[in-house]
Image 1: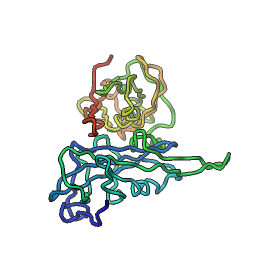
Image 2: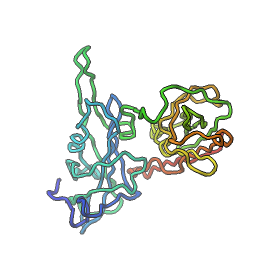
Image 3: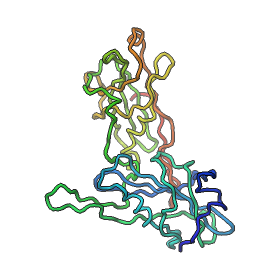
Image 4: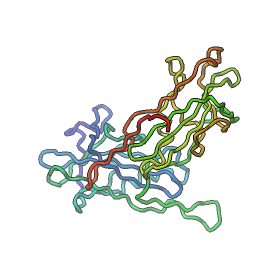
Length: 309
């Protein structure tokens, strides 16, 4: 049952002039995906307020959505409902603010509403996202048939995977035998490997490289590789020369990357003689990449740099 007011004053959230609440490590995630790629994630949490249960949360959608899906995400969020132990406690999650997709929603800004459900510790919210037909194919024409349903990786699913043109060179460069290689592993299995080198392209220092997913990944991590690279850095002589390697080309996993065609990312620095004499170091992040609390317990997946195998 839906209460008619948002706790903007009582809980100190929801207006630009006020500090927002943030979600805790007990956040619960629900994901929905489009058949054309990409999706929505809703992060929710229950909290006590004056003997009743407050529902707090935020939502995110994949970046670079197609025009067919423009504006559909918020409508889906408004149609979503929350159940606790089989009882519907709230309908229409439009009160939640939209946030950018993130790996870990603990600490994400949230808005809250007060429900009629008496508070009891240990309860877990279950968010149900409605199945929707976004676009109907016209039987051989240009319009695709797109549906949305509650499955997949949500906002971390790939929509239109666009690498900004201005950040990379239009031609491919073959990696030299001495390219630097780094890899990291998910605690749930599998991982990411990246190979790169610093080269001169038109008098400017570029990081040229590729990356691969490592075997053994779970459903939660299969589409996180580029997000891991987004948080990676390249260092030379103790200084960071480039942050964000998400523009690198993805290739099949291999032990040796020499001779592989690689894309190049512009560091914005002029090339100098000392660049060729010093090796680069690839640094991958060490962080939680998935966290959700369900009725079965907490699921936490961490990504950590690891020795090459």
